[in-house]
Amino acid sequence: MSRARWLSVAFLVPMVLSGCVSTSTLTMTREKPVVDRSVVSPKLEKNRYEKIMVIPPSGTSRGAFEPQIVLFEREFLRRGITVISGAITGKVVLEAPGGDDEKKSEAAALLTDLERALIMAKRTGADAILQVGDFSLSQEVVKTRFFVVDATGGTFREVPQEEYEAFQGFQKQWFASKEMRFIGRLVDVENGEVVATLDVSIPLNHLLPGDYVATFSWDVIRDPAWMQDSENFPYSGNWDSKARKLAEERIIETVVRQLSPQ
Image (cartoon, rainbow, N blue to C red; front, side, top):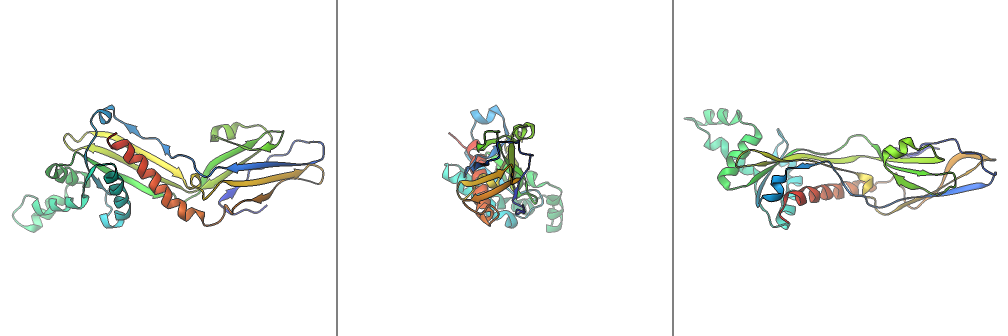
C-alpha cells in the first residue's frame, strides 16, 4: 500500500483467526502537549523577573528573526512583563571606547552578542536576557505518534515509543511529522548567572485540524494484508502549514509561562 511520506505504517504478520474479516479503529486525537525538557533554577521560582530583553540566535540578524521575537514580546507583555528591545544592543558600537568610529567598531566586534546585550541590559534596567539558541522546524520527518492493538482487534490505543518498540501484540502503526523546537537560556543581568536552560519542542502532528480517525481491516483467508479502509481527513494534505504556526505559539506560551510572574 502506497502512502504519502507523512504517514508510515508498520506491518506485522496477522495471527490466524477464524477466517472472518476483522476491523480496527484508530483515533489520533487533535492535540497533545509540548515536550518540555527545560531545567529551571530554584532561584527563578523565588525571584521572578519583571523586565526581560529577547535577543536572537548568535550571528543572526534581528530582522531575520523579527517575527519570532514579536511573538515572544507579545506574550511577555500579555503577562505583565516589560520587554526591552534587543535592538538597543547596537548602541554598544557607538559607545565603545576609542578615539574614532573605526576603533569603536573594532572594540565592539570583539564582544559576543550576549556580552553586548548584557552591557545594554544593565543600562536599560532589564533584569534578565532571554537568549535564543535555536527556534526552527526540523528538515526531516520523524516518528512521533505510536499506536497498538491486541489480538481482539477493535480499538487502537496510543502508547509511548518505548512501549511501541517493545510491543509483541497483534498490529501496530506509527505516524511521522516534522518537529518544531526551541532551545535557549535565561541569563541574570546582575551577575550573568544562567537561571534556566530551555528546551521545548512539539511535533506538528500534535496539532492536527481535528481528530484523525481511520479504520483498518484484514481477511485472513482472502487477503491477510493490513489495509486501510477509510480516514476522516487526509493526513497527507497541507494541514502542516497551519500546524507550524500553532507550534510556534504553543512553544512560546510554554517558555514565557516558566519565566513570568505567577
